[in-house]
Length: 442
Image 1 (cartoon, rainbow, N blue to C red):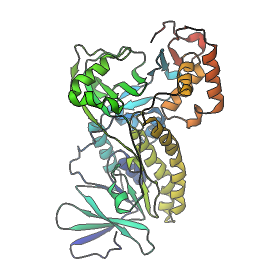
Image 2: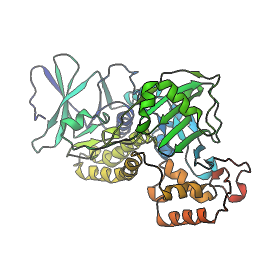
Image 3: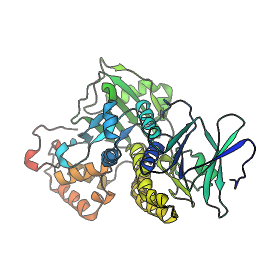
Image 4: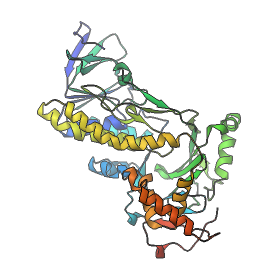
């Protein structure tokens, strides 16, 4: 960290906001700030405009739908072939819960990062006031006399250095954030007891209800999701005690896992169009989103959650939008942003609540009695099914599902079911009379 005088090999440039990282979070924030009339430096270490993150499931939950609409991202994503999911089926062990478009559950969207990142970078870079600086790596931060973060020092790979100064520096550079490290921001890490692999197929057939499926299977999880270009993404999240079988023959273990899914996708005749993508360790990481005066963190730099519930891209879009909402006016007025950053931290508590729950789920423990009761009750109680879908889409506070009244209702519903009764598929939010007649056993 330097207070920094400008040397012979350095240049200085002034902005209202400096954003480090030009992926989802960084481009979202830059676009919002530029549209507010602010001067923005968007610093990206990769030189290629096509650079993109590879280890990302890119499924954007429905709770982010309004943000994407408001920022004007939804339609361009559709124009690039994004797949929309309006009825994600969830396997309960006894049957399926399937929300419908008229249930009030907002749609999810999926566009592979090879398309999404360049698209967002193009939108941000063409926004008036935004200066996209590709091929620049942050090597130091600048402090003012009071100790607040006041800028960054970048390198383009040569001998020269560029000092950029601004009243707000934003770290949008991922869970291994260089900005957070240089700022000495405390990091809270938690273990993830699952690993993950996925791939894409052309010509796969989904056999479960809905336009995508999720299988919580005790300690393991699997997903089948439509993506752009008519492809299907199939992913598995086994508990780490199954890692040896994947180490021996990853492809064979993956195929066996998918073949055993209840109502799983038919892959006979389908063409696998990518290698298996994944990792054997993905810890949960969180940092204070407003850790120091003059500094904010968004996206994975603030919270890298368990990937199983597919929250990462949504959190990136939403945290960036919340930061711009909280601080743009103060920056435009030339006012101190400390109070505005406190407002951002308060907005970020929505993510913090879900992340706390996600850290528990990442321990890959079997579902407890209450979790089993909620899933079972959702098969016959449309309101609980709707609440479960809103919770899964991160479209409401966790209390939409996790509150004493709903828990008690779930327990009562499970107890009054007839012994041996096979539950039906329940479209979330529909009255009981509209429940489909077909019944799926375990």
